[in-house]
Length: 163
Image 1: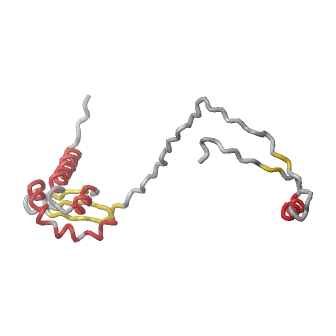
Image 2: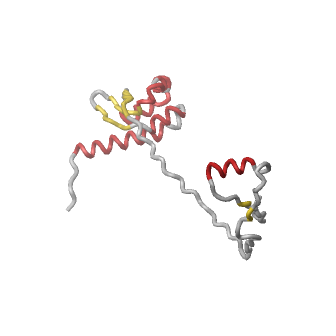
């Protein structure tokens, strides 16, 4: 069994559709900034007796409110055709911006294959160094005094993929 819509729901749908149609037609004839503002509007109501079309747009657009006045000659004809002769557009700058959701960008990682290359190490263990000459190895002995341990030489091997 179909649920019958009440009259006000149908009227709201027609008015919303009328506003959508107005925006689609007008954006080609007005300043691009005003067109962007119209896309961000929300249709509030249409008072048929007073012929007032009330819309809400973002608060931040209040800086550009003069555009609605300056561009009136470009959109009034379409407002009259869609909402009736001498329709008046009332703009409220009351909408809040929706926070932008930042989606983390997935970074594509590529696995490098070395193929059949085999890395050979000349010496798996670091080479021990004779540091008995304290004059020659002054800094090394100072470090050992504070930190202790052993000193080993680490040999860096050059591989084909080292740049």
